[in-house]
Length: 319
Image 1 (cartoon, helix red, strand yellow):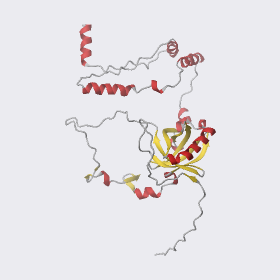
Image 2 (cartoon, rainbow, N blue to C red; image 1 turned 60 degrees about the horizontal axis):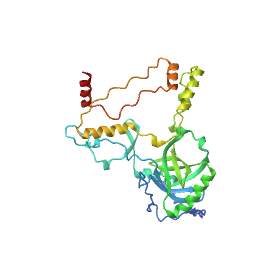
Image 3 (cartoon, one colour; image 1 turned 135 degrees about the vertical axis):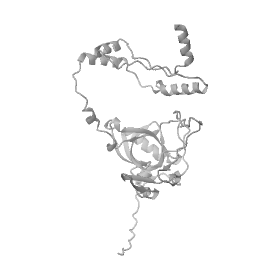
Image 4 (tube, one colour; image 1 turned 135 degrees about the horizontal axis):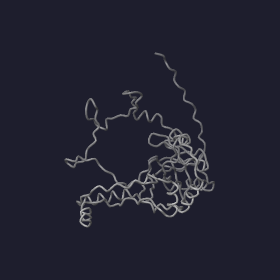
């Protein structure tokens, strides 16, 4: 066996002086504001760094799904919730805690990767969100924007450095770009000043986005009628409005909640009649002119499904 010479320990270089807000430990207690829907646990925790200035921060989801309807799979014969048991096709059921992760390199051949392997490829961005560039928001194609987050100072001690970075970004008016590791992936983040804080968006990487222009090239070229375009522009002007998110609600979810409530009360429901087909447009010009005069498509289905009792009453009236 060939012998290896012992490594010489390199002399340690003096670290650059940097302003770093004091942190007692990586897992120190966070000051989480009491805001409806805001999780008490961040999706990522580390340091925000601009050159030699840094401060401890935490990243929280800016959206919540706490109000979403979710369903469980049940055995219709017993009414019991079904358990999903991990099963080996050869040996049978196995404990989930005993499972390991594997990457399929070819059919039925895997490379096993454990926690130590994941730790060996950790980057600095695992615990640091370092601002690398400042760009104009208009230079980022909307197809790259993904999920919104709130980037908050970890505690009061981090507030000063956080406020300095935020104020400088607000005055500059551009978007800060940095990278951070979340859920075993390095993600590109876009930061912008918003009020007293920083709003962060994850951005898709280039290889995650389809070539939009190439996809649209497949659309057939047609010669459009200028009069039709003029009418369509007038329709757009009629429907122009300021975006007010409170005006929009998930009508399908509302209908589902109503359905569940009625079934819980023991009401027997029937399937609603299908909506009329409005896709068969005989004349595009006629449809545009009708729309300009105030014509509308068929209204959305009622949130209350049809029931047997109502159907019987209608039959009696018509009889």
